[in-house]
Length: 311
Image (tube, rainbow, N blue to C red; front, side, top):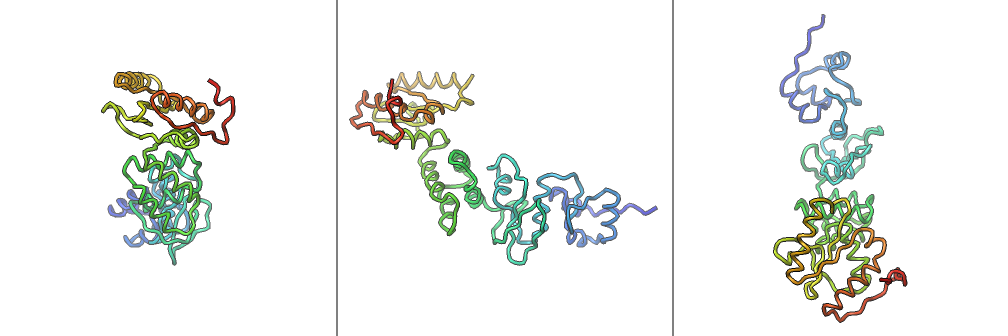
């Protein structure tokens, strides 16, 4: 009977730190021979992930990510949507792990990984591209609303500043969705922190020549508002249907009443209003602004029609 090999504790700790994955080079450095490795695999103690990479636990996405790093060599960095998932800006892990490898890095032909030749700096473990770079990398695969939500969350959380992301954009000759990315960053920096708020800003306020509202302000020192026309005593609140129910609806009522007591009127619109009939929303806002002293003129946009301006 072949005696069971007792693995060094530091090797076990290294495997635990790498989601159960070890490279052949790492194993040999601890004095474990290829013959012992083959026996561990045959016994089912270890599993062969791919050539030169072994796993001591059940397969997970994080394990595949670590395996890609070990395959790529010392310069290997997880990137694009794979890095986005590790940073928490992608909800689901991609089916294929993207790995950036510098010159001399190893490239494996396997559908589980996508290796790209590019020198990138990594952060954290497993090493991944920095958050501002990751945002720019994934921007091309996002819709307008998805990109708005992602940038708003990243910037609101303080994990990246607009100028950090813009610096990455400026440093590259080719950036997918460069114009849109730059535009949304400007909107987010100006206080727009949801896709619905950005839709209101562009499709309602700017498209129809309404005055510029202040965003994320506290007129009554307690509640923040989506848009506040300070000079005209008008607040616009934009309600996502999934959020404004139950306790949230009660809070909305308390906020509206408090603002009314302070002489400020609130108009509320949902996604259906702002996206479905932005011109009608613009008319309602313009009417209230005019009652409160706005002397401007409501401008028509290419979408405007008689139905949109009906009461």
